Amino acid sequence: MKWMFTVLLSIVMLFAAEIMAQAPTDRALSTSLDSLLNANFKPAEPGMVVLAVRKGKVVYRKAFGSANLEQGVPLKPDMIFRIGSITKQFTAIAILQLAEQGKLKLSDSVQQYVPDFPAKGHTITIEHLLTHTSGIPDYMAIDHPDPYIERHDVTLSFIINHFKTAPLSFAPGTRFGYTNSGYTLLGYIIEKVSGQKYHDYIQKEVLDKAGLKHTFYANEMTIVPGRVNGYTRDKGFYQNTYYQTLSLGYACGDLLSNVDDLYAWNQALLAGKLVKKETLEKAFTAYKLQNGTVTNYGYGWNVGNMHGTLCIKHEGQVSGFISLESYFPKEDVFVAMLTNVKSGEDRTDFSDKRFRLFSQVPRTVLGNLFPKAVAVPDAVLDTYTGKYQTVSGKKTIAIKRKGHTLYMVDGMEFGMYALSERRFYVMDVPAEIFVEFISDSAGKVTGLIVEQNGRYEWKKIE
Image (cartoon, rainbow, N blue to C red; front, top):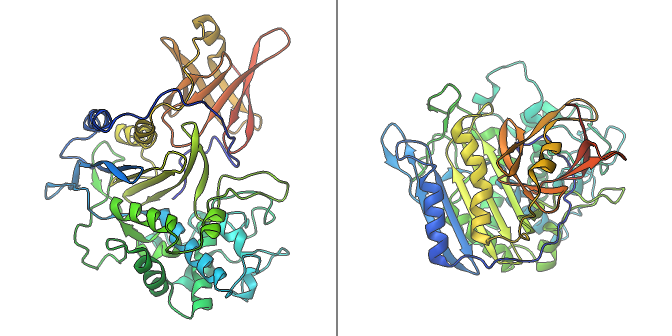
């Protein structure tokens, strides 16, 4: 349910770039994506469904790989996946509906609706929950004495009791810290304010109003036509993913859907079927911390630049599945990708390829929005190679050269696109990452600055 990269933390640095190339034609796009995806998926392995829509026209909708390895069932574009944390958008919209109706205010404290939730010396507001700025730790990261707790059906009160006494990680409103706990509390608040069970409210007031026919809250016993099997690969071969109860996700990650409904959801929001236009604009606006720093999150959506343009998106990671949906409003481009393999320790070739595809597919649909790469002499590139460490010493990355290109190495290798002799854009990651090398007065390279969710200095150590 979290972004895989821990190298980089809290506000998105906007990068303005002139459009140097037009988006590819429909035929060229189809040819490019077919080539890219066919090279990455085999029929007898877990796969991916991809949907791309440009200015209201579906320009790509295909499935690759298998939905069930044991039965040899091929994936189809309309099949149903667990979508994990994309669920948070639906919870956020429910809260915003109730706010529009005057039944709550985003400035209200959590204790107004959950009286027994400890305040811990601070005012924690509904807005803090929506924007992941509450400081409440993620219940998925808090140890439980039962090592198999994820296999048991759990109740909402059980989840809240698991984290409610944990100390805050920071004062509310002062930092961004992604946490599923906040959205679990939002689900509870929806029940208290609406007088309905969370799932009943979402079905009637959100899913039905959006016209979604293939989006469900369903447990493992429910028959869901077209439901895809999830897999893992930690030992050099594919296995059925370990069992994780859907009830553990509750309001932060228990939805199932397909690519068509994710697009229909985006369109219903833009058409004003769920909330007012000005409310949606607020949800699509990155939240500012108390010190004025801009985070990369609004109300249920990541908000920032990707591939040189504004992107509103969310990822979902849950046992056996990873999902990503992205909307580029300036270009009116929507891309959804659903895959049926995931593991917390997954560093396999498939993981590498899948992660890169989450960046490569949207970039292919958009076309190159960056200026032409600057030619940097190999001798200069060589001065940048070596190992770099955070100031705290907790993290190390490497920079190396292959041919005329630099690569950032953090478990996997990511190419770096030269925007100037010192400034580079890191390719093939589903986040906007820039690297700028720094030197001392004698011209010796001493470190680098990483820009993604803030500016972070790394020291060159060898």
